[in-house]
Image 1 (tube, helix red, strand yellow):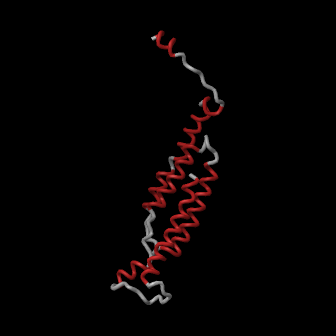
Image 2: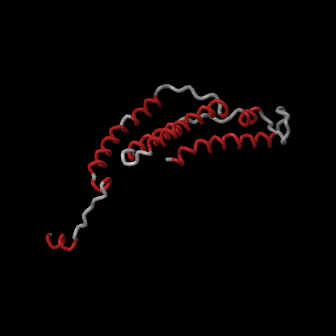
Image 3: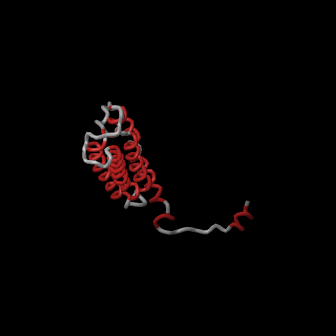
Length: 157
């Protein structure tokens, strides 16, 4: 989860560096913004206007963080601040991405948001069920266990 919370910064860095290098190569490492090696307006726009905003990867990342946190958070409470750190990093990187790197974000209806909320609404129930199991399991918190004597078990049956 910590690695996943830092990945938006690497994607942001790559998203800035690679297009910058491609633009400098196109301009011949000069400072004239009107000098280009592109022969068509479509190729020029593709290089200088930015990429499309892909939102479904962002939504799947949010679903992944929420579900992992809710599934294992009762046994590993450190996941809650890590998830908050992850959401903060995603927010900052997405604001920068939407403002400086991509074309205008697509106009979306509420279908994607309703789908994501439909997936997220079951996470608290899983948190409660898995938390109850973790609390009732003696081996997790109290470090108690019992060895089974396999010789006597086999003789009984």
